[in-house]
Image (cartoon, rainbow, N blue to C red; front, side):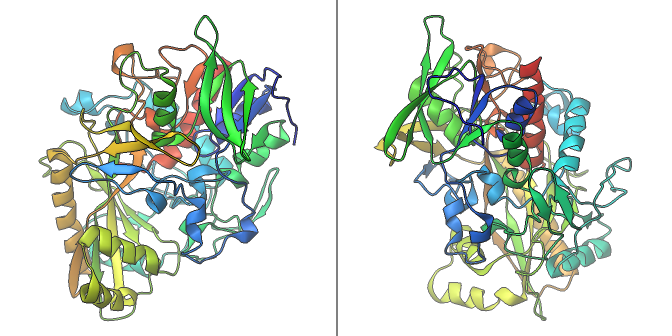
Length: 508
């Protein structure tokens, strides 16, 4: 790997190596720029990943974040990665594309916010990402007949079969889910062999075979091959500027020492928590007062059904079936909508969900766990509208790096509650149609979005539609903090595409 001196003025420093940072890093390096990526977490050897859920949180951001509001969002294993590869180390690799209506939510409904980008342009980048990382899926796709996937879908597991049965009996369209999981072996440039699907249900714990796409086995090897440097265990806490207000260096801690890397431009790609936390800690890029505001968390409510025969949902790709029939339900009394995905789960994760989402404890919890092997679930990814009181602020409490901890306040509004109610009814009917004897609802939200949103009006956001700071011309943000609204699609695929788009805008 090429390395750079701290006193060398590199072209770009990128903070974060996940879905927001890695594609951009590779693109810039391939065009000949001198680029350095700083990652707070370690550089893991995939061979060390195991199926043990007790060991798995080492790839999650486990440093405390403080969560409040009427529906506080969960952190730790639920959100954010820690290591070279970021959140893609633990993501579910569920990769639906964003719906064009979701990008124009305010124009369509008068609520939420529009995205200042063109949907067709975004899809072109998404197609490029799907080809690069290896996204599998059905061709044709029921809600987009012109879509084509280069990889056939992975095998369905039992929860997917049950959801498909229930949907069929109710006349709901469902199909194999798009997933960044290889269904057949491939040679990944600059990385090597990646195996086809192993039907593992443990992909959230870290995946050792390369079957699941992460930035660590796709974009980052390409970036290094093109001359990029990646520094692991490097926690950025400071940003320096010159008399004109332009970024000149970043300050970070590594191995108990403090370092300063000079740069001509800076890209923040730490995600919806770490990017605004850094900006609030440094007091930068916030003339609009919007840094940390409008925190978004997807609705993620789940319904689980108990069946007479063993389901063994820990086997196979966890979310192998999808339905987009409810992205805009005909009977909706809310703005936006939701998509459905089948759910398999590992035992400790399921236990945590029962405690957190259903409030079970003691004998009630043990009884529910006894039914685990006989249980299958369905979950949603639901629209979340920006709200003034949902925000990230800084605590007086410091973390292990001496940085104020994030305090996130989140309360689902009437629209999110209406989506949940509609979705619970839908999922319950599907499971009962498939033969479930009884059902249980688990409350949940997912993803950390919107805290540095993009906007055309500098007073309404933090960056423009390209990801460039309204305040500081050589500061860019490339992560899901820039989302003006949550979309009904999971954010990973969209963020990978936006990262390439931001890189191209920087190069231009």
